[in-house]
Length: 303
Ligand code: DON
Image 1 (cartoon, rainbow, N blue to C red):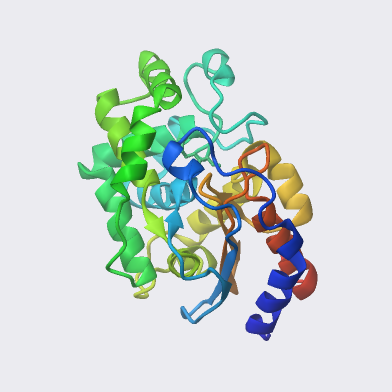
Image 2: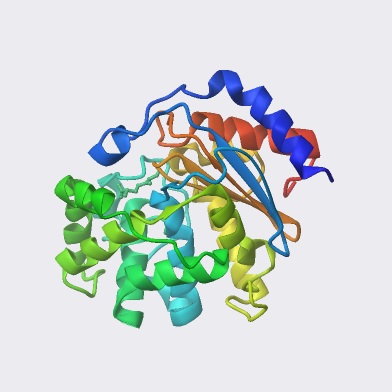
């Protein structure tokens, strides 16, 4: 398959949408990003990457890191994680509090903020330094040792972090958070601030297309765990738009409010698209459209 030609065609097709939507406004450092960027990359199973547009320009990964934190927490701590977080779509916005009270402090899934806080809490218990562990994992899987946190984004988010603090304290009141909330929030904000480009992210996500095998050929997850993460990405990775994303794209995907989305074609390739203009659910407008075009043009989807 000529991935380069496909990417160029997609970039042309979605050009009218680039700039639509709005960059995340609740984190001032992200609100300042020009919404007219668009980049997309495809990595094959061996890490050969094709790209188009701004595919080598770094952006804030934000919630895309939730999938990497989940993989690490499962790999290091195993299935007991699922006693603390569910696997059902929430049907609510990514930062919603409402379900937590009547579901006893157990978040619906690991990709809404509440669930991701539980995962980072677990990783903090398992490793002593959750955010550095995620960064190191991303460096190794992308093959880019230069990856780094963006302190401006982390501090900006911390200064405007009341909602995440509320989620963490509320879950702690149910005994579902093991570490002190301020330390947990710190790790969560720094994890979200990691900067990467489309090529790095597409490469780093390959373990999900390689049925759990890392870039160096060692095993991170069992085949079954890799399937499980892909399944949760499909059903929960784009929040209250996951049904629409599955309908339009038909691939496991994970979005972030920086405008990035990672998607997986198991057994075949990984994709990353970036465009900062977001829709009402916090997903990149041009990014979803580009992945929609990808599966239409190639016929590659899990269905
Ligand atoms: O927790 C937050 O608010 C952000 N740092 C991450 C949220 C995010 O990316 C949600 N995605 N669409």
